[in-house]
Length: 306
Image (tube, rainbow, N blue to C red; front, side, top):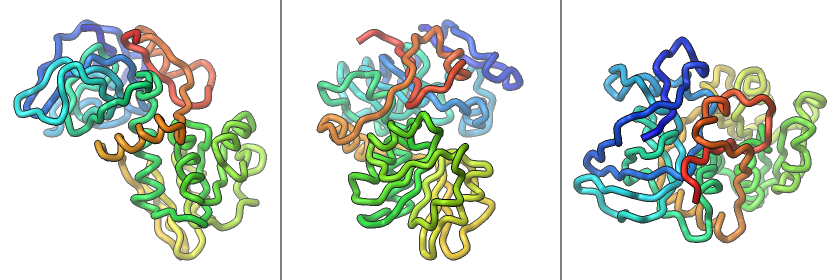
């Protein structure tokens, strides 16, 4: 099968190549998925799991990409809950070969059925972004109706979903980004938009929840915006500066079949819409890690035509 692989840790993105790999093996409780569309995180090549397995052993050449939508073609021993020929979407394991391939092995519990009427490209933009947004806002920050939430990167893959979920939950949503993101963020349900490069953080005031996906200086400065009893939650990096009278949470997204199914139903009902940016064929996946221009939403790799 064809797959995007990486062998040399020092080479970074330039080491990504289109290769031929053996067909994957379905272990116990696995399924093999024919990947129709896949998503990735641009900094995956910095993750330890891209290079080593759970025991810390080298596993290169590695296949990156951890979001997928496709069709089940094979069941491993003991696998239940899914059937051959079923449309599914979800998340692959961090320390196994991922989704930038024609076929991949996935633990069945990491996948949810994909309802009819949702295309694979749209579905592939949902798993990590949707789960990250939900877990940040509700599992970690416990956002409730009437509270205020500041969402950085409001037009990005994760931020755009977080804006929609927070708006539906009845929160007052402040989104940040660049000037070109304003209409997108407001259209998704943000009550206020802040152009970070032009306006900065000084005029925002205190909020109940800050959700950060940017890290760095923005994360550190955002701790000052958390009102007493509030929460800053980030998926970008560990927090080194704590809010004065609140709490800070750094987390790594966890697969959740039940929540995936809920997000898919919201998408089907028209209550949630992932923003899909560039859509590229598998052969251009390496170039997609370092795009020539920034586009709103999530870049998706189309592996098989629907």
